[in-house]
Length: 164
Image 1 (cartoon, helix red, strand yellow):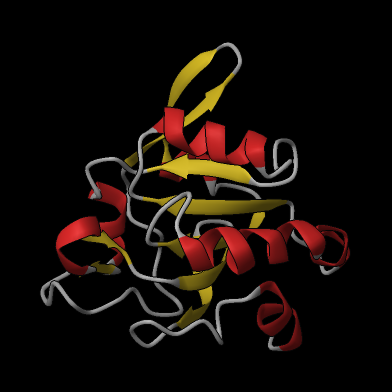
Image 2: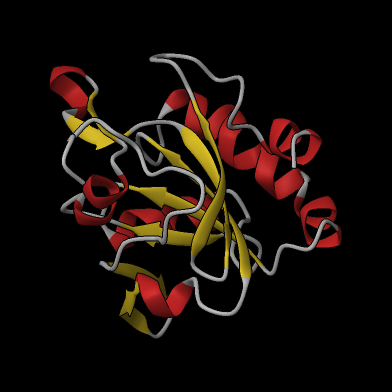
């Protein structure tokens, strides 16, 4: 993308990048072109695992609405954060999300940068993915729900379900 602050737009292909997912067997490096191929995914991005709104509202909403999201035709539910894979798995286990939400680790924010969703979140968090949700159909973005800074309104599972 030419504008570093311009987010991916509907109709564009998901950019190629390497993400990580940790299981009990170890950490796997996965290419986004493979992960999003031949499936329909709802992916929500957030500033960080174990942070207040992310832990209290964002992740729990997708866990609670998983059956409705699957009924709406989603093959995968994914959470993207600029955290390492170990932290993402620990957060998943603490929230009983394993097997429900795929935790996509983007520790160097390469994928988040390519999506155009990296923002500065202050001196504690630094550069992180901004809060948003995306609908991706066979590797192509069809919907994006970008939050304003410090907001949690349009990227919730409920809002996505009501607007697709």
